[in-house]
Structure formats: C-alpha cells, structure tokens
Amino acid sequence: MAVTIRDVAKRAGVSPSTASRALNGKGRMRPETRARILRAARELGYRPNVHARGLATRVTGCIGVVIAARHLPVERSFYGLVLEAIESTLDQEGYHVVFSVLRDQSPPKCAQEGRVDGLAILGTDIGPELVLPLRKQLPLVLVDHAIPGVDSVLPDSESGARAAVEHLLSHGHKEIAFIAETLADPSFARRLAGYREALADHGLPYREELVAEGGRRPQSWRPAMEKLLRLRKLPTAIFAANDSMAIGAMRVLQERGIPVPEEVAVVGFDDGDLAPYVTPPLTSVFVPRWEMGEVAARRLLELVRGEEPRARQVMLATELVVRRSCGCGGG
Image 1: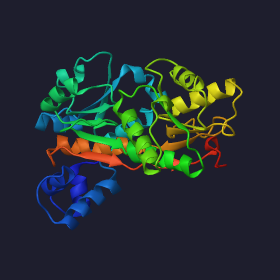
Image 2: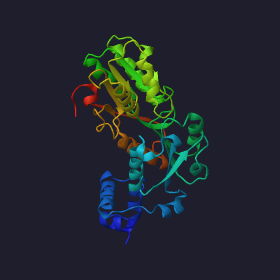
Image 3: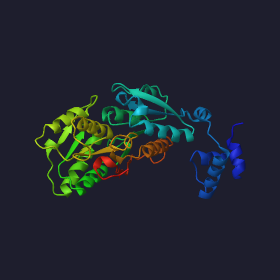
Image 4: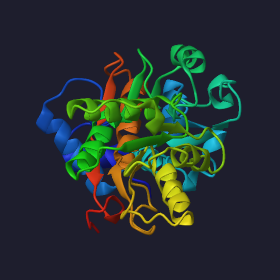
C-alpha cells in the first residue's frame, strides 16, 4: 500500500492539511512542527503523487534536462554524473526527468509543448539567444554556464586554473603552455583567465605562442600540440583546459618519445573518471559534478515552487588533485 499524506499526518500528530503544507513547502508553521512532519515522511518512505498533484495544480511533475548533441553519448561525457545527480535529486522529490538533445538552436519540444515545469540546461553550447526567451516561459537553471540574469550553477574555473598553474610554478616551471579546444567556450576562457592571473602574480609575462587551440573536432589535442611542438623551445609544462586535452597531449608527447613528466609535466581540468588510470596518472583540477547537478536540481525546484525568484549564480569550489603527471609523485 502506498503511504499517504494521512499516514504522515498521523505519525507526526498533525492534521492532513498541515502535513500537506509542510511537504509542499507552503504556509507558516513552527520549524519544529515542519521538521517533525518531514521526519515522519522520511521514516514512512512517503513519495508525493505527482500525477494527482498535477491535476490539482496544473503542473506536469516533470523537469526537462537539455544538452547539446555533441556531448552524446552522455554517459561518457563530462555531464553524465551531473545528469545522474539531477535525476536522483528530482526523483527524491517525486519529479520525473524529460531528457532533450538539441541538434540546432531550436527550443526543446518539451518546453514548447508545455510538458515540463522547468528546465536544466547543461553546458555552454546553448547561448542567450535561446536561453533568454525560454526563461520568460518557465523556470530555468544553467549548469556549467552563466548568462547574466539567469540562475546558474558552475565550478570556480578561474581559481581552479590558478591553483593548477601555481602548483607548476612552485615546482620550478616557468615555461607553461595552455591548451584548449576553443577559447570561444566561456568555461575554457575562464580557465585561461586563471592561468594568466597566476603568471602575473609570479611576475611572468603572458605569451601568446604558449596558448594553443585545437578546435571543436575529434582529437583536437593534436593541432594544439603541433603548434607547441613547432616552438623553438618546448615548454616544460602544459596546463590543459580539460582532461581530454591533457590526456591527448600526453599521448602526442609519448608518440614523439618525450617522457611525461620527466621532460614535460601535464595537468588537466575536471578530474574525470579516466584521470587516475592513464599512464602516468593525471594531475587534474577536481570539478564537483555531482554537487553541480544536485544544487541545480534543488534550485530549479525552488523556482518551480515560486521560492526566491531573483536569479542567482552559485559557484562551487574546485580542488587540485595531484598525481604523477606533474612530476610530484602523487597517487
């Protein structure tokens, strides 16, 4: 038998209407009363009936999650864990996820057809020309991206990049290159800004010849590394804007017989699933992907419920995870 609001109310010693207000986050009541009702709901395993709620309130009980096609298959992409966290958090609140893949800049059908109560948009590929009109239609949260006036959850890329470059500088590296797919990507641009700040803090000039883009293409690390390999003097360290570029850089160096980290240290960004298992294990900046998804889902639910409508940006801390690719003998 499904647990009902009446069961929760009986366990908490309140009326069903009071239990309903507490579970829906509405109405005033003593904090201890609300806490007692929520505790009773947890103990009984209560799950809201979103279909019945939808009939009463004209909401769908569904949240749309939108991602650009280039990140497919999503389970292998940076956003796989983010999506899993979003789905898990929404499931706990009785919501279902409607997954939508954008192959152009047309609005997702789930939003156009009114099949969702809100949207989480993953990544930087979906720009303001699409986001801003959508935000006028329904609650919306950006994940790993920021547009002024829109709720967003993203990692602190600048401070993470600074930490990575400062780590290399502290170990005597002065010729540090930066590689990325494209600096048109706002996340990578923020990481470049952190790279530049670290150099400036240590009195070192920014040198354009040490910055290389590979483009949005398969194996984009190859053209980026080819630029660096054409330099008269190879840099002693490479900081890559993501792990894919870092692992590709190590592959190119190893193909050329240039040992990592003995001749060139390499540091990545994301600390994805492969980072500990490549050879040598990759030093990388950890991005809290699960937390990003969880925070985004909870913020979206606040917006759906009409709580704190003023847009805000949540920036989550990153952390450098040291392994052997930087030459420090980590795990």
